[in-house]
Amino acid sequence: MNAEIQGNDDIALAEKLRSGLGHVRQELSRRIVGQEEALDQVLLTLLVGGNSIITGVPGLAKTLIVHTMAQTLDLKFSRIQFTPDLMPSDITGTDIIQEDAEGRRSLVFAPGPVFANVVLADEINRTPPKTQAALLEAMQERRVTVQGKTFTLAPPFFVFATQNPIELEGTYPLPEAQLDRFMFDIVIGHLPEDQEMEVIRRTTVLDTVSFTPTLGAADIVEFQKLVRRVPVADDVIRYAVRLVRMTRPDEASAFDFVRNWVEYGASVRAAQYLVLGGKARALMFGRAHVGFDDIRALARPVLRHRLLRTFAAESGRVTTDAIVDRILERVAPPPSNLR
Image 1 (cartoon, helix red, strand yellow):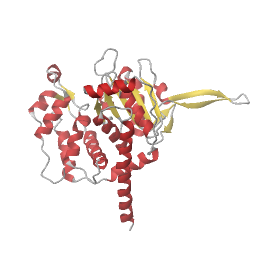
Image 2 (cartoon, helix red, strand yellow):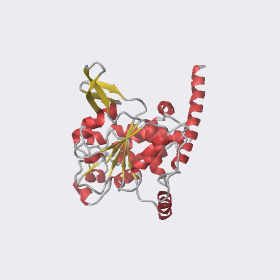
Image 3 (tube, helix red, strand yellow):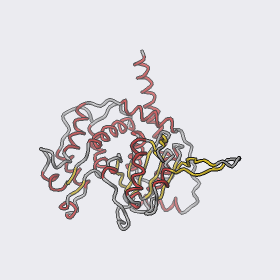
Image 4 (tube, helix red, strand yellow):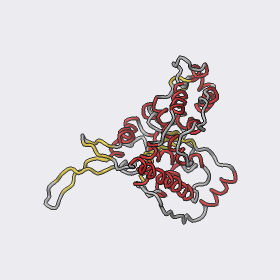
């Protein structure tokens, strides 16, 4: 009886997710032109409860996408501009001295901008590793430790970091351990001409767009739990694991091009995010099971920032996307009806 009720509840929740995300997409389209694939990956990040990097040259609405998404979901938004002189306490917060009415002084914790639902780490590679690392505990553990005291971050919590791929002067590359904690590397490119014209039309008049949220923080938390309950066939999991293992040059069956072009491959966390992202994608498109196509569709954003290229690949301008595409061509999913 309880299992049946739980199943019925899940069906209703899945329908609420699908229709709710449809409304969110509609609201986002009132301010964001095009970039459908990037928007889907941002929403998948929310459904999984992960963190993602958004990579693109200046002027492609990276910040606007994240801020607008937070507005449409009525989530608390915080933006941190990463600069060379940014300190860890500028992110996490610090103790300050306060005096009460009787003149007694005491230390009181003043929360930093990380205490939000959606944290935008703008140009994260412009600050030294010590300050970048201040986000690690928040991203992984959903908590912050300051002066030996631990503070839990209210759910849902997400970090979206932006990077500019063309301006490298004065930047500090993210450590591999931190890169691996990002679910996706969401790459945003220039729009087609007609969409770029629409951007100009919308941004050269007064912005009168307001949003009516139909989903909120509690809904996102419930959706994240639902994603974890989506069933996945062993063949699909095996396919995700196989794709990830084939990125590792030390794998016994590694392809020659992987050995030539990849210094280090993806970790097991990549396979976890492929499967979790596949679950969320299936629900987003109204399906109750994960197919091989869900895994293939997410291979690029999940793997592209997890592959460390060799000098031969860099000098030959072989991108990580090109490597992932070749692996997808060579690793076929097992015969199945799951598509």
